[in-house]
Length: 183
Image 1 (cartoon, rainbow, N blue to C red):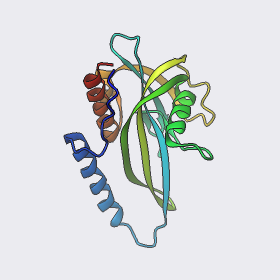
Image 2 (image 1 turned 30 degrees about the vertical axis):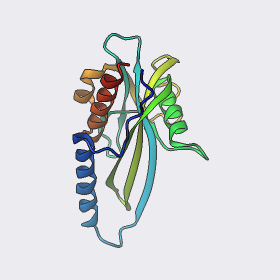
Image 3 (image 1 turned 45 degrees about the vertical axis):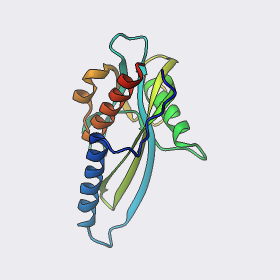
Image 4 (image 1 turned 90 degrees about the vertical axis):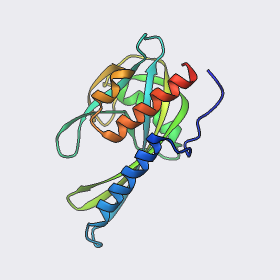
């Protein structure tokens, strides 16, 4: 694998699409009442691949969202204490999937807005591409018990399995990085 690390600031069709989605969600949030309080949230996680599988499987989780709907998504969570985004991503992926991983490259960040009954949330999620280094697929180590299922999904099928468009775009970025660097 090359030592070249992709520049997350470089404009590609995918980064342009993410920027458009960020602008669209920002405009939607501005339609809310100015008196509605806003809470900032940060999470980190990403795509952990099994390099020994012929189809480069990716570990994803199923969880119930705040409205009670089942979603298939990339593992992620909030940094604890003085953790960096990278440290939080590695820990959260291990907790939610049972898979230990090592970060290869950052994939970029996404942000979005959503409402809960008393306030709006502006959430930023930092994504990384990781290679699995050990562990077994399980949700038993998730201390918050947010993950209700976990699965290995071939990288090419990942965009069809993920619930959210922004995570499907992150999956496409990961595929491009992997193809470029012949992982």
